[in-house]
Length: 261
Image 1 (cartoon, rainbow, N blue to C red):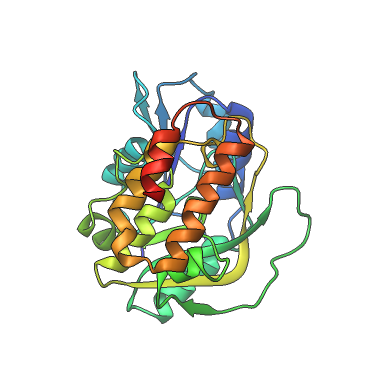
Image 2 (cartoon, rainbow, N blue to C red):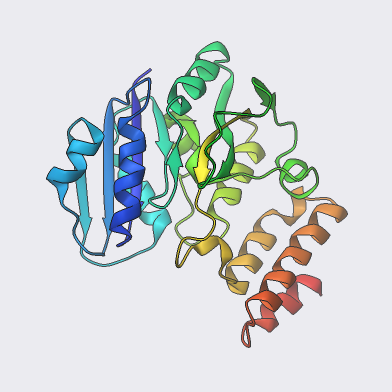
């Protein structure tokens, strides 16, 4: 299987270098590495290519249109059978692609593979149970079992990715959850690599995951609530409410109220 790795970024050049280096250090190399600059500062491409150990396809957007747009643009450039996504403030362990691609090869019915993850500061080797978990219900996994879908752990067959329209460019938050939900809702098979091969930087400056966006949360909720049971809906809304309080948001409470209405 040919693989295309897509990394969108906007500034964060020091963490971008680390992300690229983690791609270059993979036991199984990707076939192409695509960087999409979403209207930010230009990087030193020669330096990044040294870290990657391969040529980089560089896409520069003069204006920022968000991570979802940048990922989709990178995916359109990709020629691989499998699209692999990595955020510019995260990293992969050396065996990430090898493990993920082996699972996809052994289980051709799986269209979309997510991956377990740990903190970026972890010095442990890959841990947790090895093997593939078939996700029978994405909302139960995400909002019931305490699991989580993170973009930096996504490997998805290109045909499946575009069959659901790629990332929703109108979804300004919960883009990872939204893609997983739409793939599952379409009837495609979703898998989860239980071995942690992704390192997530949970304290990166400006990380979208930790910024309340009630309008985006309401959009996600309205798009998917029919596939969520009562407990799923409550857990999602509770999480939004906690984020608003923790983030001390003074605006956007009308959107939150509509979720509870």
